[in-house]
Length: 369
Image 1 (cartoon, rainbow, N blue to C red):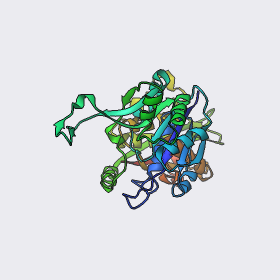
Image 2 (image 1 turned 120 degrees about the horizontal axis):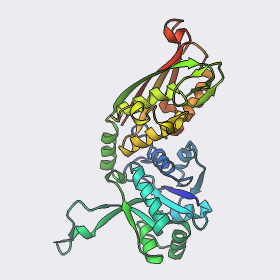
Image 3 (image 1 turned 180 degrees about the horizontal axis):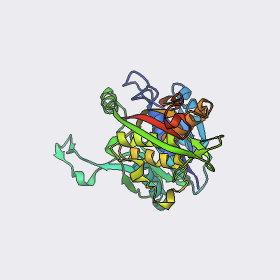
Image 4 (image 1 turned 45 degrees about the vertical axis):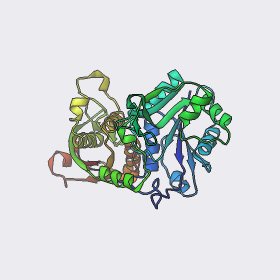
């Protein structure tokens, strides 16, 4: 079974006056945020329906899963149908349809929709009505306890949602759930999020900007002793050297300092608390696995990584040749762009334990919003 993320990047953004999907918002674009949301939530490949305006940004996307681009249609429904056909999905696959303009949706909402689609055939992210609702013509209130607001993602068994769209033909619908309910069967609603609003109006954009630019900063420091019989791993890169760092895990001091900075910015404690060195499940574990878990916890708290900066204090070996790969590793694990990662190395001119080759240390700063 494959979980196919269908990302809709069409629309003209006429009400905005600029392309809301490709304009940076808090260090990233809506297109990039939404694509990352899908792959970190369990989609193992993406199909992106694009327009001439959004195609360059989609083509420049760096993703850890295969990405296919297809032409968007003149309507949302046609874009979905184009993407479903381009995906070459098979019976048993799950299609997760998401509007790129809902770039602040929570990972938990995506996972819930996917699991419901597996079990029930559909999973429609939705939130209860919080406001009173009136019929404008009769001026009478509606029972909001019976009403619900749908969002995306909306997840379905692939063959069923494809069948619904093919039966609908040129008919358009405001969302995929309407066609599924008409042609396939009852819907299953799953928890969405108040952060899953859609960037539609200039007011939405202003609200998103205000939400993004509330930075949180954390600092991290770690040090490990160098010893024989261990691999030297920094930033997830296996570096040829006669010694390695002694630790319960793989001793990746670069990632350990980074994780502490991220956790500090989020007020989530430190790695010693989350991944205690007395726990056998973390013995010799790759620190990249731990970093991905930290990233998951940040997303659960509604936080996004804006920028990270790490300085490694090391007399030997020279680390600069290995930093490009380390930057790629960190960017992939945090679902950010490589430009949001800064790595540096310095020596202590032979002074202190780092200078004498007894240990390697690292300091990190992380900015979240």
